[in-house]
Amino acid sequence: MSIVLGAIADDFTGATDLANNLVRAGMRTLQVIGVPQGALDLSDIDAIVVALKSRSCPAQDAIGDSLAALDWLQDQSARQIFFKYCSTFDSTDDGNIGPVADALLDQLGARQTVMVPAFPVNGRTVYQGHLFVGDRLLNDSGMEHHPLNPMTDADLVRTLSRQTPHTVGLLARPTLAAGPEQARAHLDRLEKQNVRHVICDTLDEADLTVLAATLAQSALVTGGSGLGQALPAEYRRLGWLENVDNAGQLAPASGASLILSGSCSRATLAQVEHFLSRFEGFALDPIALADSDDQITEALAFARDRLSRTDPVLIYASATPDKVKQAQEQLGVAAAGERVERALARLAKELVAEGVGKLLVAGGETSGAVVSALGISTLRIGEQIDPGVPWTQTHLPGRETPLSLALKSGNFGEVDFFSRAFEVLS
Ligand code: ADP
Image 1 (cartoon, rainbow, N blue to C red):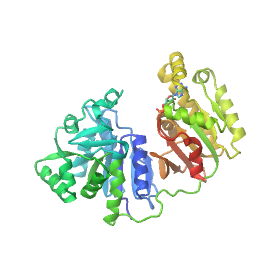
Image 2: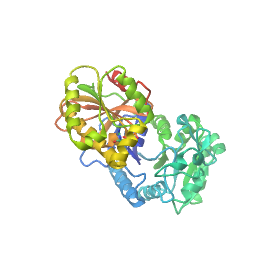
Image 3: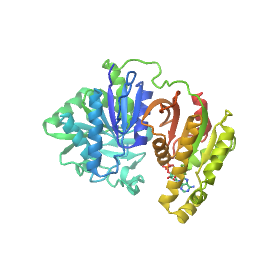
């Protein structure tokens, strides 16, 4: 069967989040990092998620990257295109959600698309076009202080209208509650009135199911990973999707287990502490890293001594806010972060070459640095460890067996995540 869903995600962890939901709903999913250069084996793949970095860049760059991704997905004959953004509609008045959606519609020759950011299980719902995070309106949820995309208006019809010259409409809950036929008729009526973008209310999973039934055959849908959770059942009903027992089945993992942590988020700090109560770890200090490579040499020696054992080995820069502040004051914020990212990326490269086959990385930016140092361009998505974080697998040049990789951003995962992740895998 061919590729059913081709998704374009505006950031890396958002892409994984969507891919994870697709797998859980029964689609065999590949995440690709940027637009692939060479040919890929897609013979047992139902969905592809292209991870871009287009959320906060200039709108023209976001459009260019998104259209290149669309071109490539069209070459793979994807039946439906999904533009994935954050469930808090992260964008500014200049974009990039409106401009990218407009460009995708133009290239697809379609006249209308929907906006379904809601992710009810995570407390993101939309009512009368207003986005809520838990029981707060978006502009009162903390998102109004976001450093890159401050969200100061919860009215998504109004917010999106500032990002597009076209008309924005609403599919409100009462129409949605009447079922897919009524919802479809409403969208068609709006299309006749040249309404190009339709914000969709969504209060719960039942609303997502109605939306999926309404939208599965549209050329382009846009939204958060909640919609991704609901669409596969509809594809199956349409006969587009093969029934597979376990869409997250990966090849058996092999090799030594390593954890690299550059995240200083509260959840990660607790995970590091929990892990160190049972196993060994090596702490990196950005100030020492700035002076010489001695710490890297010591960390390598520490890991090499232990990798032949079955227990995972932890190397971490994760530190409490006061220690981070101290390093930042001495080195500068960006330089302190870069030192740590560079050190962890180098350790990943050397230790994977020396036999690490199961690698867990904590930290969004840290994961980006490791993925790029290892030259990873595709990730086959496997079983979920904790919500939003799956094991993945990738093939590296010159390596016979695949590398198993789990990339955990900031506040994800339960306190025992570091040790349990490897138990899930074996
Ligand atoms: P998260 O997903 O938790 O936000 P990231 O990896 O995205 O984690 O960001 C953490 C940043 O903090 C990275 O740039 C990392 O290099 C940096 N960092 C990690 N440890 C320290 C430390 N001890 N002092 C200063 N910066 C650090």
